Image (cartoon, rainbow, N blue to C red; front, side, top):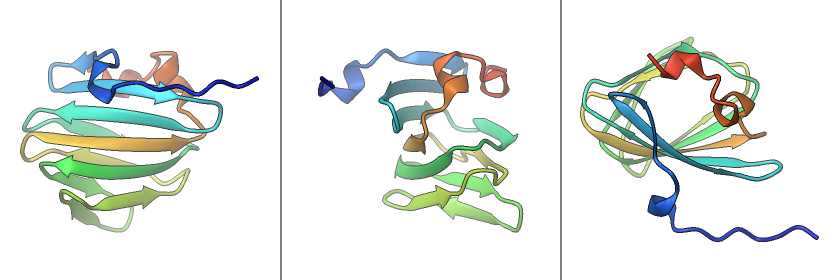
Length: 118
């Protein structure tokens, strides 16, 4: 029997990835949620993955670099990125956001996400 998981989001283990970025994660068989906190000036290098991604900006600003444009994601806005589409982001101010992935990011689970750990 599958079991339901109930947690307080900010009590999930905070994983510092680099001096500018902290992540908290929870995942199941088909879905992953990640709560990310960025300091002003943080950069997520351009990358791509097979996972579909939904990014929800809670506070701050995210300047995304996409193959055909750049865009700014503001609080309350969401961005749906199909699998295989390259993207990166820069945080011009302190930012808190949530990412949702399907399927779960195995590189994040295994901590082999070297592009974030610089």
